[in-house]
Image (cartoon, rainbow, N blue to C red; front, side, top):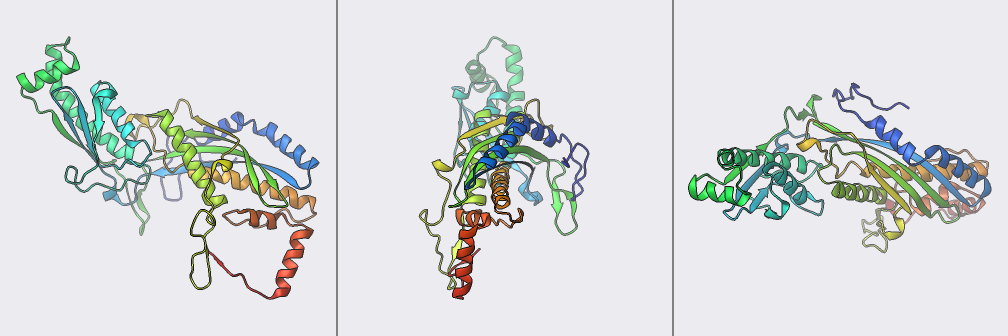
Length: 388
């Protein structure tokens, strides 16, 4: 298998280090029992004419960083109050991805205080100006590192008190710092990844700090008469480094995969010739629902992984899983090929995305679809909508 390996150079001149793509590929094939399932799929297809199954494994390599150098910066403000509670402000937006939780975990680790003592404030530009976009799956990297910077500053200020009174609790240490030693209990932090910045015009520079790798194996069953399909199983192995929060990361992987599934298999954008949008709601613009979730959905975080380039050896994980949904698309194509072989047709046929039931049905091709195609040609009518 021609996969990236350690030391390979990308087309944008970046040397791959800590490349775990092959490990993800091998692990997902083993965990999904790919060879056994391949035989089971072939047996099923030999016994069924109008229902076909398919299986596919796909890898992904996702670069983490913004191309624009100025976007690669994170900021934080950490305040410790006299009762020992900690309030954190940082430049990222919590939108359900678990960013605040990871920020709290990072601060808890550095300051050695329980999570119950830590809160994250709303992101406000009057507290932290010039915040960067919460995008590109790098917010925990940028702002987490900024929080580490601020917490380390506070830790250094508290160190003399802790050395003088090693038996003090956290609350006693903070009280002594404020009331006796008059130490500032507020610190700002800043982080920018070293060397990152890429010139799209010249092709020079370092576009990414590191890569997140992964692989997925999916098995599907296609109804050749309707074009409907069901994802029977999906197994994913993802290299997230040393995860800051495994539960959050697994949730992000599952969510990213399903978002990519909608993009590749369901969400068709249709516009009439006069510019009128037809797909204006869930009745016509199909998004993933409960019935689209794989019947068996297994996510594994790659073991013994890490990166020296992000906070606590973790990796960004928001967007990297999305294109692993291509394993479903490729598995559907595998099933379509089986249907076309039974029909005595060339197994290779274009299957545009999103691979909707209508497109899958026509790709399977049989005497029924040929009747439709013939009637359509005779009518001389053009399509009443435009695909975009």
